[in-house]
Length: 184
Image (cartoon, rainbow, N blue to C red; front, side, top):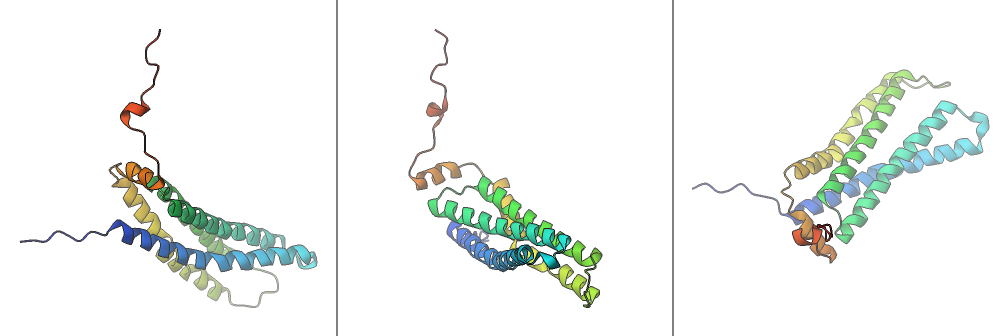
């Protein structure tokens, strides 16, 4: 007699997503804070302004803040029970995309940009940038892959359940048909 494979209960999956969101926020907040501080510093002390660094700090700080904003949106939607599989997929893929853009920029910056007055080792900068992909592979891609898998295997019955949790009912077939179907 074979036993069926174990399945994860939905509460465990939602708890796992919440934990992943916390770790994503912990990884994104210092980046947004430090790069935002660097932008502010460049605005105050424009004598030392390097335009490329200013653009890099501005956009990567905005990208990290965008990840934090998406996490807050997900958290508030999940708290209200209004987070469905479609929105989970869109938000997780957008977070993974933003993190990939930031990592690609960091890697290309380390490889091709040679800052003035920099006496550090270029090889070390490239190695650090290349190994930082582990953070993306561990924190951002698994949630995006899970959201894509859950959306692909969805049978469509979750809309009734999520609507019931919010306190309203989803429209039935009779309610979604037009009232004036015949021409008088």
